[in-house]
Length: 364
Image 1 (cartoon, rainbow, N blue to C red):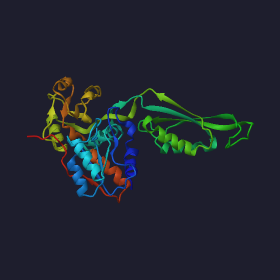
Image 2 (cartoon, rainbow, N blue to C red):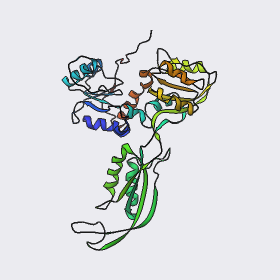
Image 3 (tube, rainbow, N blue to C red):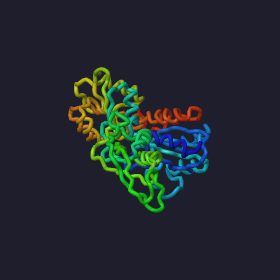
Image 4 (cartoon, rainbow, N blue to C red):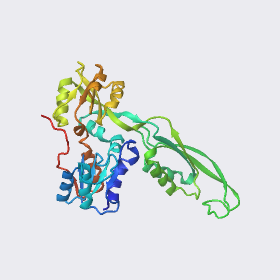
């Protein structure tokens, strides 16, 4: 298989369009058409990870954190990023990253932690906005079902926990085929009336191109009439962080000790105890300080994230418990997501989890 074919599996699950504006995801080193012997999965790509890839005969590294985050102006080996890129290029190893696109999708990094913690009724903590469109297309009624199914299978029509959602109106379309056309129905130069169905579906912007391609591939007309409108409401199935509920309430300190063991972290930094039981849990993998307010608004009893600064702990104000479990620790399940997605599609291909400890933070 090629780099493009394998990374295409990741992008079908976590489209690049879901990345945040500051991010740098996708293929960072290598060529799309390079043949792949094996895949190595990691959170970070370092020279040691490249060495491991060489030893284990894996020439594609898929990481959660992008190796190249800011622009590279030179490659002199002056830091670990430059050293890693040089080594990878020298040995023909491709490097790919899925970062905030993997965070933002339904079933992403935060949800992976939530499910492993046993949370139920999982929802998005901070849904994305201005990311939905309504697609309306006019189809001959006899072809409506085929076109509708093509759009559904491409990801259109998801509304909350319902899928294959659409609105359909029957009507009559009119047109006159001009010189040089090859009309599916009707005759050149004559006005034609055709029974048509107007199909409306909701589509996330990151997959709009995929849905349009699917729709056009099944539509019989030479010239397809369709409209796209922005939908001014949050997307409940995409965004950062998740919210869920424990099967039963747990004492605060008991739950903190459970988290320490679960995330395999050296310590948990937390805000003052509230004296309340833990039932509703908010989680955001990575740097999630910006969503403390969302966790409070959602009436979470605890907010689990990383990279909380000193003054940000004050934002808890006794309304919830903030637990900083560590950046690497909070995102460690990204590797499992990659593995599950790839091995499901490529059960007989070599997909390996890195054994290199890339977490730069140690605890005394």
